[in-house]
Image (cartoon, rainbow, N blue to C red; front, side, top):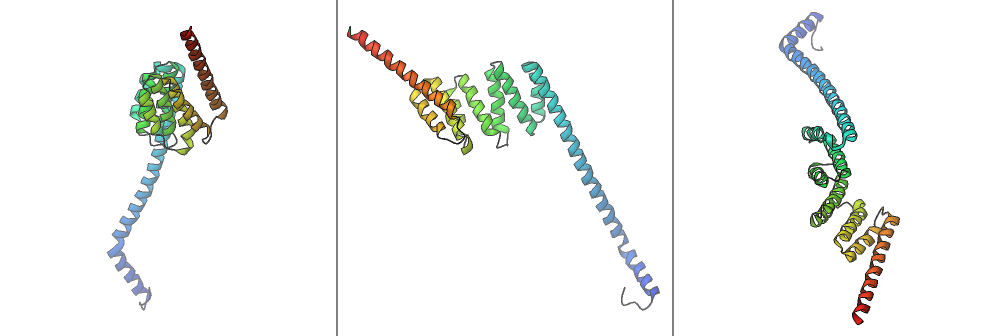
Length: 223
């Protein structure tokens, strides 16, 4: 404390400063400590909540894998309770898979539609939409299935999208559209070339059979 001639004057000046500012210093210190403690408590509580949620997810998925759709009520409750969390998305996908195993395509459509509408995970959405389109095709909702596929815009899923479109066209009996879709898929990134080639070869066999039937019909008409 420069500017004070004696040590006694320095002490008196310090006392005067503390008298004027001491409460503010104490309040600031207490507030800072409270904030630090609160931050640590918040982090600890968040960690505990995530651990509890993870454990609950494991329990639900285990029950679902062991009991199938008999565990639907418990599974649905978990999804509804944690709808804003990634665990709900994963659980809905699991429930949809179990529904497909039991050929309950309506239930599978419900779960996959929920994921496609509510999930914000870019890596999961295209997968959910591909599965949803297949399920909708199983329900003969072909227009809905093709509309669902149109919502997939990532280039990395373009080949798989075209392949599923081809499968749907086959179900509709539109073999020319199916052939075009399979050829598009075959030229895409990450294409399963062996499987797609088999599908194209199958279409060629169908074309030959149709041509043969037409030829036989023509011969019969001439007789």
